Amino acid sequence: MSRSNAVAAFVLLSSLGCSRRSEPAAEPAGPGTPLPPEIARTIEDSCLSCHGDPPTSSAPQSLASVEAWRAPSLSDPAKTNGEMALERMKDGLRPMPPMGAVGATELDAIEAWVAAGMPDGKQALP
Ligand code: HEC
Image 1: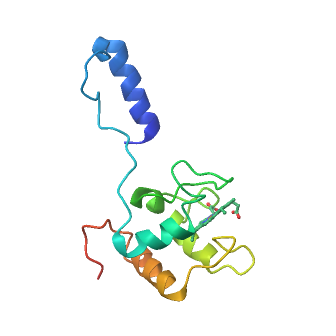
Image 2: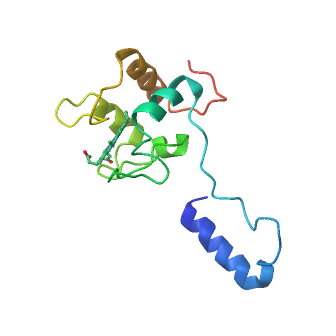
Image 3: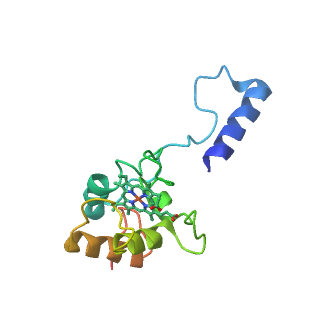
């Protein structure tokens, strides 16, 4: 459920008189599925200082969950954030991160994960 749907559901349930119930009204919006361990450390170290949830330092999007990586890119919705991230990590003119590139081994691991369809940590990579 998207955050705005979660908010809408909460408002709706509140208006129906459920607001005093202690249990959550609906599935909590939550932070999303954690990134799988083989790539999580690299992304934490290189990206999440700006692309956290919520993003900071003018970064346009979160890259903090599997769902965020699968979501359409804001600047080119025909691509996922994951595909766009790979492009930008290899972009010599507008690199991501802006300072201090991701190492080749780490980039290979992220590329393999994106190519595999960005599975969550419970699914094995091919
Ligand atoms: C110091 C802050 C900072 C860090 C660290 C950083 N970014 Fe960014 N990122 C930005 C800002 C600001 C923009 C928006 C301007 C631009 O596109 O260059 C951006 C834009 C992007 C975009 C373009 C989004 C779109 O839809 O066009 C992608 C993809 C991206 N970053 C991926 C990454 C990845 C992957 C990492 C880590 C490997 C990373 N960034 C690290 C600040 C950061």
